[in-house]
Length: 253
Image (spheres, rainbow, N blue to C red):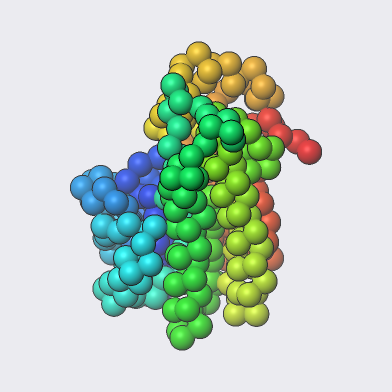
């Protein structure tokens, strides 16, 4: 019998994390779904096919919480083969899109914590565990954003800056993990139909986005999940340090 592999998905309660948890479970992974919203993560986990899944409450902005999360998963489900970081966000709303000159330090720091710090803490803990206990086909998938590549946009300067930091972290982790057989890649979504899209944009803006997407529509969370599932597969072993654009052709440079 083939041993089930464990995937840790952060931000599992909704959006891209939820879709990815469902895809990985369907592919035979054991999913550890982590989120600040334990009830939401538990609801997602309860609906997954297969067995060996578990929900965890974790604030992955916090160093001690990330250490406790990995300790619990490694003790209860086994070594984490794949780390997929979807936790993130922004302080901006449809009615609040400040420019750099209007951004406060508190907003800047909050955005850093939600995006680059969460990725750093989880990647660091994953690499520490895998150094002590290697696994075959180790995988890390981080979530960047089209905003990191082009700047600006309704999500604000901090979001673009700290998603760009994720890309730098991804390349460094790819270098450090390579000899251990660990790949690290980033998915850079364009406009995707998630709660986060409507939290930062009004409906008119969302409809207007379609004009700049060659395929003529907003992307689906399942399309990000399918990309993530490929990146953690054994077939993606020669892909590392890469940024995978999933944006319907809106950024072709």
